[in-house]
Length: 279
Image (cartoon, rainbow, N blue to C red):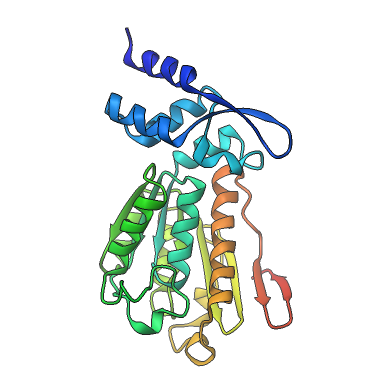
């Protein structure tokens, strides 16, 4: 008998009913059942979760994504690949949110180490992680957050053609870089690979977030490569987490519904001002 058929039948038999807060009843596969099937069948968590979704059974891990994220959308997320460049303030939050959403493959690149000045804002910066490579720390944390997804850590800095080598294998590139030096390189790599780029920057309590489609003008072309405003105004935790959440939301919109924002969103948390600007 076909092993896939046996697995599908076993998943269906193991599914449970759950009543959501809105009163809707859905079939779910618990996280413990996913683990049990993986050990018994030698199949990865993610393939078991995909098999469940194909039978309209929601993996318990993602059930609170429903109903804004349908079962079809969740399957898309599990089948998607995202390249995140920079795993510090923005990137640490972004990769975690993408993992919790269920993005199946996340490539995260950063050659830097954690240092004390990261402790004010970076999710993975702790007293324990000081001196550790950011990519290695992200890999360890995401394995605990969501063992179903595949995180590929690149623990060195990428420039030029190296960025293209990674960007050409993914659905979306996310710019979580600090400063200005490498941003234009990354935008060019995304354009060469015909991949959307979700970009953001933070300075003080303000920042911007937007999706740059291939060939379109992005802020990296306008800001140059000199000193960045963040070097003067700082990067407090609330504005960094805000930008990262907006970036993760842009990725979600693109992967599930192909609806990128058509403008940059500028925000100022001091006076709660939000403004859309088209380049």
